[in-house]
Image (cartoon, rainbow, N blue to C red; front, top):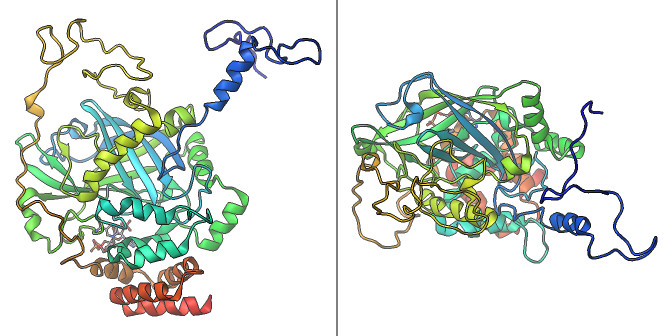
Length: 483
Ligand code: NDP
């Protein structure tokens, strides 16, 4: 019960509504009148309550918070967000699973999205990461194919382990991410208990115009917690919304999760020290090669007031970069720079960046015009300044924020991304980090996911595991025999 006088119910046009219980009918049991505008408005709105869900990362959980800078990285980046130690910047994080639809259970084995929008004073910087430092593929031409194997079969409308392992066993570059996915970290208890990684190589550039290559890391300060498959089954039997309950409920109760933000930084010319492609998304940068350096602490401390408006409509894109932070030649990053913004234009509309959750908290001056649902004026100070260049005081470019030039050598052709790369060494380094219990669970998790997969595909995948480590293949083979 509330103790205040409720406001008057109105139509969307603001007119008071006289009756929200009874339709307007001809006679007590007669048909409803078309003139019952309130009825028609309610039904029409209900028909439009859904927008297309994301093709990937549909199921998500998010909250607002801050980044507090704890260490000086201004020698690497001129980005305002890092300007002074102690500086706080507002942010939004949306976590997600990749394959499941909007109604999927939260506690499913899958990669988790870890997308951050920093509302900086020189524009929004989006870091659209995952809870894993690598990905299944390194060439975006394979992305739609890969995602099709994670989604439903066109005939059975069921997930297809055959499609998944067929694709993976034909794509050795997936071994690293497959090993992470089926390890303990492939099924976190809740978003608070996992790391985030920018995954791609990005660039930093400083006030002197020097470029550095950079990897971003967000280390959970709650500690890592994971479910086994059996534990997750029990959780899902009780609740399909365990992540929302943990994240939303925890923040509502004042338990604010935190992550340590760190970077690995390499000077532009120093990529020569890598004996692999530092822009390959299936590889990490070993810490021995590029040590972690502290940047700050991320804290989530405010739930959204409206889930749909602020989390479902949150639009993250790696195209949102700010002066001092740039892209890299990573093929997958290049494709995401196009694809994410394109997905939002499709899902949310032309002016998705103007929605309150996506709108920068700094002045915005551009010359884009009109389009569906344009609801902002775009005042330039002079009504005649609606194109550029103009003589009427409209917004102008600022050459001081130009990124330093990048020299790229080579001819344009379709280079075979599988040639001359070692897809086994880094998964092997990970496998060797696992203790006996972790290895046993990895074997069992892989075997459990291979149910119904044709023998020739299983054998092809076992041959790949053997190239990582003979114990890996033997362990999975034994787990398959025991299943
Ligand atoms: P290091 O020993 O320096 O780093 C190991 C990293 O692996 C740490 O960041 C640690 O993350 C993480 N890690 C530790 N235990 C596990 C586990 N059981 N499951 C998953 N990750 C774990 O070695 P390298 O830098 O040479 O990396 C070795 C391997 O570690 C890589 O091939 C990669 O598979 C994995 N890894 C590497 C990362 C990197 O950026 N170099 C990042 C994450 C994983 P934490 O600090 O959270 O415990």
